[in-house]
Length: 52
Length: 185
Image 1 (cartoon, each protein chain N blue to C red):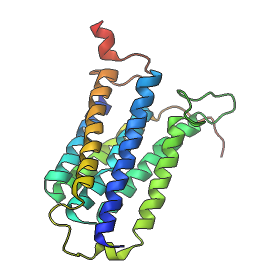
Image 2: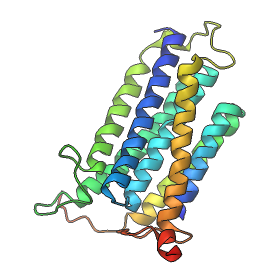
Image 3: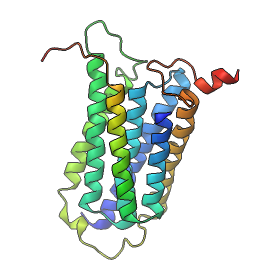
Image 4: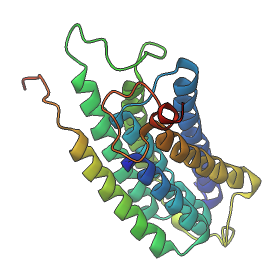
């Protein structure tokens, strides 16, 4: 469900960037990017079997 | 580089992103393999990369628009790097089928790094930021117009695909069936 929302959100951001005001598009872009990072942190829970 | 040429390059980058999204779709449909959560996130971030070029085409090239795409590309590189590292151990066959020798997340990492390099390279050309009076309100003509709607259309198709795959719940770590189609049959 989270990815459906993310795809929908970025499609809306693209439409705003193409048709709407520039500051709104940039603000919505920031919100979507933060949501992507949050989704990444939620899913990146497997332990990496690596040694650095 | 003039503003007009920079806009043409931005339109071209949208076609490249549309090609990436279409290739991911083709692999999903032809090979019958559902994308994992990190694979879906990489697709989202490829789509996010497109916002900067769309703004450049509509409002003219600005460093802030390129910065937006750079942030998206770095986030995409982090996500795809993590998936590469998850499958880097000897004996691990990776997730899904390999295309031309590399899995989708390896291609995604190459794509995001290429995007970072190309964005840095195009930022070197200062003349594109001088208004030549030809880009308002929307520049690029049919070539750019089609590119924008192509990438928006492919993102909309991903909305439908992700909803069919995951349904109203959180996406499975290793999806094997479309959740909504399973309940419907």
